[in-house]
Image (cartoon, rainbow, N blue to C red; front, side):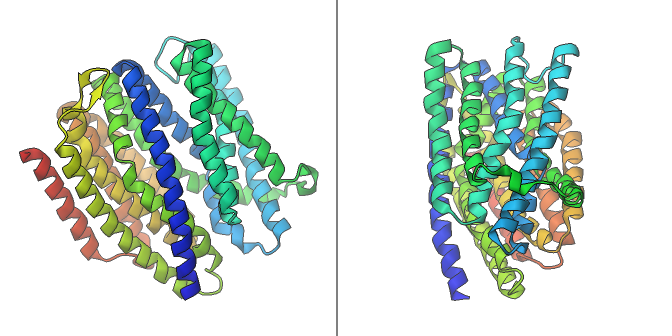
Length: 439
């Protein structure tokens, strides 16, 4: 038991430090873009950034989650690698078909992804469907086999490399949007080379793909992809209503608010990255110990999230002016910060509840909860944003994450945190709202 605890602590330090470095790079890059661009153009980048996060996770079709759940049920290295290859094949098979469909829709049916005049942006963005999921797959493999050095190297290589490539292409094309999208494609192509190396350039040994395995992984991925669609689709829905009711500049404010608070979930994500492989690897041998640490980590995450979010709310509440290209946006960003902080806390807690549901093989329940939550968000976000303005977007995200958390808690056979912590979360949020209101 002490060995597991030591491994969790050691790996958590590594992954949390990595997440901090990545968030720092993204934070400065986003602030740099907000400084050099107009609010409207920065809003367009905000739209693309949503797709940048949405596409790679959505178009892995839940295979990244399926992998972490069933990877350790295989014993030999070849069996594990074969299982991983099957997941990659499923992803590639569906994505080639999807890209063809998108190209037909854009070319012949005037379908648009980005609401700007250049159709080239849509074609460039669609091309990322083929390449960005590869990054998720490669990173996931190194995490599952616990090759932490490779995981760290390629994450940093991707984040820092895309900035270097973006600046280089921008000097050549003098087009921010094209440069931004092309930098993603180029980096993903470089990561594809690493995918080939993982399979030792001998892909033939992993064929043929068994029909039963293809069918089973596709069905599991179908339900679990609802989880990722729900998570990232929520930002698309909110972005859509903000753009149409408040304007592109508020999309930029929305993006900036979330970027400023990304430090909240990086701790939870770092611990999650370290814990999940250990959790599922030990499930067969000692389920009691695995669930013990799941509860401990969930409770600790709640306390850290609520304390840190309160600190952030107070800190940014005292900052009166945050500027994008000379225009003061402090009022718009600061008023939404408590809602963003709370939504991050609820989301990170919900991610641990999902691990429990996965161990119980309740993939169908996860899919249903995720789908219902997205439908709820689509229903409530329009009236809330229309009649409450920018604050309505924050309230919509909070309701969305709370709905997921409560249903996940209800359908879990094991309770991974106590009701006392829900009370702590509620009191913290009320304090944050009152602080901003009467500051």
